[in-house]
Image (tube, rainbow, N blue to C red):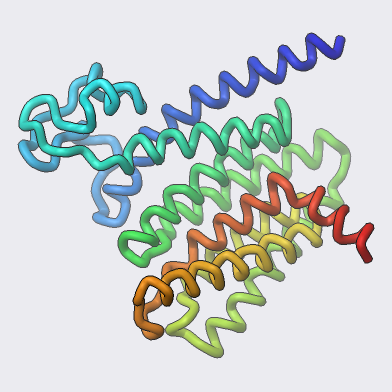
Length: 264
């Protein structure tokens, strides 16, 4: 039975990993087009240099980039390594979600969260922007999936914690935004409400851990930027650090909290 369980988890991990590669390829389109208010459906992807439409054989996640050695087949223009990196990262996060939650609605919900966070972080790094067009649909999907999961599991109380986590995270970052609007943009506040929703489903302690970890990662990133000669007045994108803190709380938050409680 244990062997079958391990085998089932391996199949699930493989399936979610392959799905993650496909979703990651789609995220590359979202990252490029959403901030420019372009359709994510049409036209098909093109080389930014020669504008030749990319064929299906050259659009296989990761593999096509490797076979083409990171260059366009037609004009030999270099293709950014960001594309396969996004695809591999998405696949990795989907596998982690599968191992964390198993086959469940939670797996679907947190896979959507991870995909959204990858897109938001990439856009924020490039443009200092947290798109509402990603945040609000993720909110809606989470609401539907968590409500269904609470009904199926017979645990409506978890929805209270979920909403409370969203409100609490929003309140914390909104307060910081009021004190220092230039240091904390409202896009980050809106994103915190979304992250609090997901972390609240796991428990109130996960909300605090996720936000705390996000600020710790942000502080480390700020010190690293200063060490590399960045000006103190240059604002760092904060969404990637919030995303990293949230992923930490989701994937390894319970062992961290258990260790902290034992230590106390």
